[in-house]
Length: 287
Image (cartoon, rainbow, N blue to C red; front, side, top):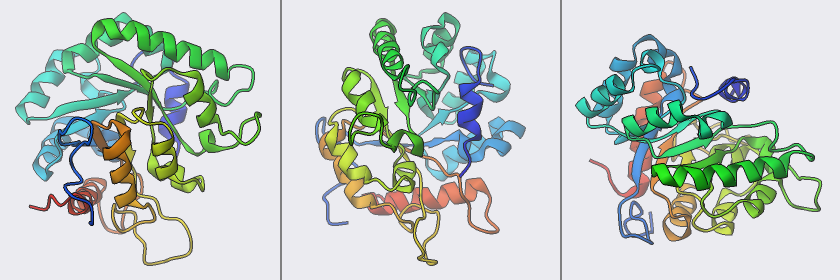
């Protein structure tokens, strides 16, 4: 799995970038079903070539929403993007943006137009910088407070680095950030990256209750078991336990599938469809 998106966003100058559990799909706190979205970075090359076609295919395969990491031909046309989303019955589960977008009026107006509530920062060099990590946490607190007036929320999306030990005992950088930020700052855990980092995603989901309002369901294959595949339900992530934690304590509104590794001979969208099928099977939602 590559970090090209993270590097891209970290360099952005500003704003927007270019079965044993009953009814696992229900959120315990609200009684509402947790929605399923696809992070469009999963099909980044295809989306860049024909965004409209990809959105149509994503809706057809059964995803309810998308999360953006760039807006392709619609980067200056939020009304046009909202129109195509509505045409396919797709909601917006969130977007990945650089930190400067959190206070950018143009970015905020764009996101309000397309119906996007969650602004996630997927990587920032200050997060793991001993001299700047607290400054970054303070910035996120301030952004979360100011975005409330617009009905928006912000948060941070991890890669493996954030789960390394910080310079403060046994705590990870993720722990320090969680402790330094208010409950309004979303901890958008990528369970695949946490698994790759050698950490237990279930432990961290339960450690910070109510903070995982959106979560990335990325298949992860670790260890020497050659039978495992980068498809949800066939990989190394303890999905049933992850889903249970999201339901019981996460405050989770969206499961966001992100497909970065693919099966031989399968396209990114075909693999995304297989992961959706696997997830629905775990949720008891096969149809």
